[in-house]
Every structure is written in C-alpha cells, then in structure tokens.
Length: 357
Image (cartoon, rainbow, N blue to C red; front, side, top):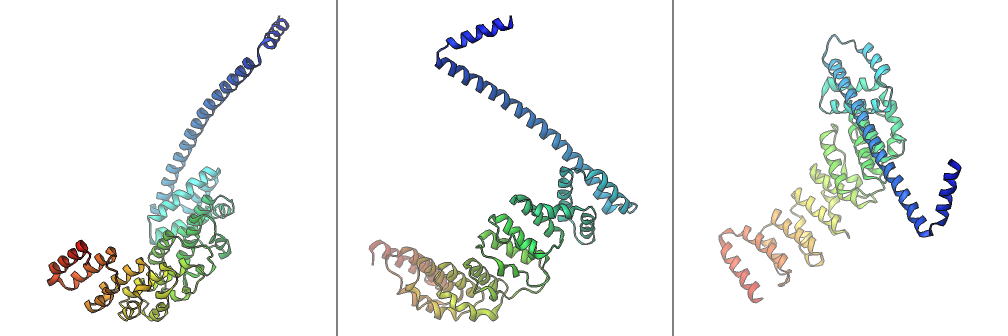
C-alpha cells in the first residue's frame, strides 16, 4: 500500500506544471520557516525567563551576603567567603551578577566599607575574571572590565590598560582614561602623552570631572601639553590652565590667540579672559578685521568682560555697516557700558538699520 501511495504521489508530482511545483516548494519553505521562527521565539522567551530568575535569585542571595558581610559583627567573613565562592560562583552568570552588585554597593559606600568591598572582590577571585574580560575582544566587555578596576581602585600593570587608550570605540578609550585618573597618585594626565586619537567633547568633560572629583593630588602643569600633536588635547590644556588658575602660564597662552585653528584661538581668548588678563585686548583688537566671524564675536565678548567703552570704540570702526550680527552684539555691549544713554543708542541703531546710514 505504501509503495502504491508513493507511486501515485510520484506520478501526481511528475504531472504537475513546473510553476505549481515552484509554488508548492515556496509554500512549504515559508511554512517551515514560520514554524521554526515561532519555536525560536518561544525558546528564547523561556530561556530569558529562566535566566532572569537565576539572576534575581543570585542578586537577592548576594544582597543578603553583602549586608551581613558589611554590617553583621558576628559574620564569620573568612568562612562565609569561602562557602560563597564554592557554592555561588560556579557559572558565568553568577560571576557577572556578583561583580555588578559589588560595584553597585561600592558606588554608594565610602571609607572603611568601600575598602572592605575591595578586599572581598579580591578574596572572591573576581579580579581574575575581570582580567580575562580585558582580553575577550568585545568592546563592551573590555569597557566594563576597566570600569570595574577603576571603580574598585584595583591596579594592574599599566600596559594592560594603555593598550586601550587609542581603541576605536570612544567608550573604551574613556574608561581607560578614567582608570588612570582615578588610580594616579601624581601626574594624573600622563596618559595624554600616549594618546593619538582626538579627545571628543564628552571625553574632555569626563576627564575634567574625574580630575575634579577623584584625583586628590597636586594639579598637573597643563602647559606641558600645549605642544601636543592633537588639537583637541591642546584645546583641553588651554581650558584647564584657566580652570585651575595657572596664571604663571599666561605668557605661554598668548601665541595661541593667533593660532590657525579658530577652535584653539577661541579657547585661548576665553581662557585669558577667565584669567582676567587685561593686556589681552591690545593684542586682539588691532587684529579684529583679520578674524572670522566667530572670533570677532569672541573679541567683542572679551571687551565686554575685561574692557571698557574706549576699547569698544576701537572696534566700532572695524565693523561693517551691513554686518548686523556683529553690530547687534556691539550695541548690547555699548548699552551695558553706557546705561544712561541706552535709549538713545537703541534709537540710533534702529535708524541706521532702517535707512542704512
């Protein structure tokens, strides 16, 4: 019977036009694909649920363990650490959750409790897993590993982190920079000497904040990076000279007000204004016309901050009558210098704008 059935099917199939065979083939393919896709979704859902349950269980277990470790005076630390390591650090998931929770606790603790957690991290053997993550290849694993080391203040040989200072991913570079900042006892920005990729704006902000919040030593001499090959490092160094009131470097900043890059030139003018270097105006006002619009606006702002009405008048004749952006900026500053003549100045400006005089 089976042979007869197959024979009939074979005859039936052979007699079908090729287009019908093609349609049937496609239909069967998409049916199998849909079934496979549905099964895969169900399997992924079940897998994620099981994984989340395991994560939650490990998290609750760890929170209880950490609370006892930190705050229970009767807690037998050496024995309990050994038991926890043997029973609850068997799988990669358990290790990952444990590292994450210890870091979370550490972020919210200071002093002795933070140091206790650092000791616990080492005694649980987690630093070995962090070092393995450094070499796994995926950028997010590397960034996470470096973050863990810097957060817990765990030092490793410099070359292991220096390798990531010029990584293609910004996140990895940023974490490696912060690592050196947090663990530095002196010269916290020494890593800039080995930096060959430009600093992004966010990296500059991140470095500045880390320098302010984590580094406890003497601020570095930022002028040492004024000749760096990267303009972004030069820009950052100029800004930091002003932020840290390094007045002794004013003379070193002066050449940068004539730099070919407007970004550097603007930062130099800003920094010298912040340092209240009034002699700056005699360097930049005569050269007003030879600058771009953005620098002209910066020069006007410098006059506003550290100059007087006489300095402003020296610029007035250099502003074209049709350049309304600069003239409006000039008007606002002039009104600030001469508040009693504010209305007359404004009326004169409106007449000039209306009639082009």
